Length: 185
Image: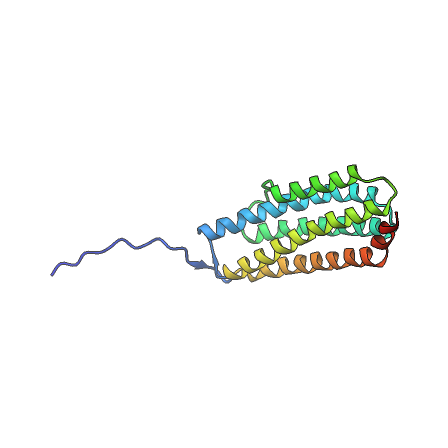
C-alpha cells in the first residue's frame, strides 16, 4: 500500500530561551507597532519643550520638563526592545501621534499666552497623548508576553507605568489649580 506525504505546513516555532516566535505575521505586526510608537516618542520629545514654553503655570512647565526627560528614556527603552528582538530601531510615522501633536499646536495658537485657559488646553492635549501611549504600551506588553518575550514585556511595563504616573500628575495639576483658575478668566 502506497502512502502519500502531504507537504508540511510552514509554521513559526518558538526559538531560544524566550520562546519568541520569529518570522511570523504576528511578530512582524508587533515590530511594526513598535516602530509606530518609536516615531511617536521621538516626535513627542520635540513637542514637549514647546508645550513647556507655552505653559503659564510653573507646575505645568515643570511637568512638561520632567516628561521630556522621561520621553527620552522611553526612546532609549524602545531601542533596547528593538535590540532584544534583533531588529534595527527604525521609526514609522504614527498618524495618531501626528494628529495629537497638531491638536496641541492648535490649542497653543487658539489660546492667549499667559492664561490658565491655555494651560487647561495643554493639559487636555497632553492627557490625550498619555492615554494613547497607555493604550499602546499596554497592548504591546501583552503582545510581547504572547510571543514569549518576557524581557521585552518587562521593559514595556516600566514605560506603561511611567505613562500612567504622568497622566495622574497632569490630573493633579488640573484639579488642584489650573481648571478653577481657567473658569474665572
